[in-house]
Image (tube, rainbow, N blue to C red; front, side):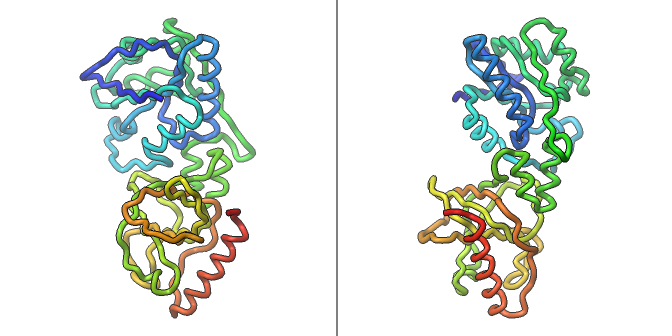
Length: 306
């Protein structure tokens, strides 16, 4: 895979013929995956590379000047998932106020100056150019490349969308989020120093520092998988205020790995959320907390395979 940036202040020509899909792709959910599949099929017809064109930062941060936009995944995760789904190239548009002011025609001309586009795949609700004046229909009329428009993907709950998945994560319904994503909802971060309270009661935890970009999860205890150095472990995951030992206003993510021994400090972990177990609560005694943690551990072993 090749990762390239498109910067209006330093436009470069990438002569490689390609068919691409374009969008923000937060979560790369089942709807997005339909675009990726269509792109790969189009690229096979044209005997060229496939590519995913996305934006960084989120255009909303520029157009509405709202800095606190939350997402299902980070750019790093987006790139990795696109690679897993078979994309040959990633093109990242460095979205600026100057870019936001381009007319739809000027936006397409910028892409064509940069990329040798044979075909472009977009969602039915894709908009581009100044104030979103360009859409799927205007793309079709430009005549410079083949355009494929993908209709919405729905299930019994309605259209599958990033907004809908974000709400499920806020509600703690990670199982439903997984169905719409096509894979478990996950975050990644670096293990940092904690207070070692868990170690003293037989449940050592890794404190994970994650990006503030992630949509805020529902506080509570989850069952999930944790990837350490490409090896998967079952994990008891607590996202909350740690009310029994050391209440903090700031939400923290702590993970107890089952069947793991070793030092995790400084390591980057991937945490996949599979099931919501219970709400976080304060225990009157340490003994009561230990009893609950033992029950949580039993539930995780019942729910998750090794």
